[in-house]
Image 1 (spheres, rainbow, N blue to C red):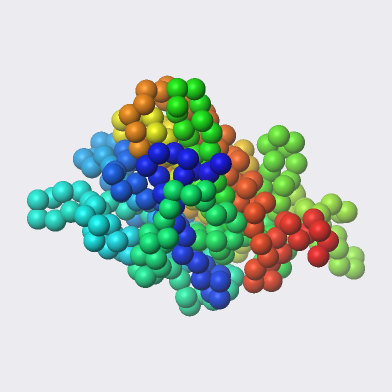
Image 2: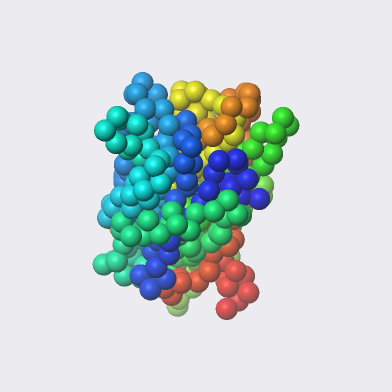
Length: 331
């Protein structure tokens, strides 16, 4: 099950396989109370200040996730155009202004760095939006996503975008959608083992990671070569996503849920929230069902955790970067 199980949520992707980039839109055209938690030290975002609980506008009409680094923020203009054409937006009297917060990830190091998500791609993603189960893997904002880049792209693993959802008692739905572009490892919290990450190196006298498929990013970071490479590799990452629920929450409450949901990133991504990450999670409240903010926040973190693993599990090899499924098959 995916985030589209949450009533009022639709998801659409736009993908450029030649450039290996794309964008994903989460539509909530009736408006959803929105919050955000931004923990990375190198964010690329739009309309984040508006989501501060002390600021006026409460509801967003869409969230955009995109590749293309800061260039990818242009795609939000296409989302705004689509929503305006459909009469959706904050009524200012003179016009309806769609509220479209956005976050980007860095994928310019795979495919073409000259082609990025733009206004047309944002519009197309809206046209593709549906309440059907979300397509996962190397699609939309996850098209160019990779993990395990501490030793360069030559030892990286393909990742993508993943989703998960759960229904609690009382008809409460909670879902997550996460594009995973981590510099280091993805950890399976149930086992504590590396799920995907920096591929081990065995070349002549050089051996990093031993006989294991994956090296340990923290061990690499503590080595001389690792410290040198990290200054370059850390510039090319970020985990971005959305959690949503049909429970009714205020702006401060949904912001707290976004904060709690980030625990799912911390459990599965190592290292997380570095100075050159743009790690950002949005949270949306689409309904009015009564629920406890702590309960929803706790399960939101669980859904983020599952979505991160699904993003890697569903990815396919692109741009010379192998996916986990191919590595496990020995291809």
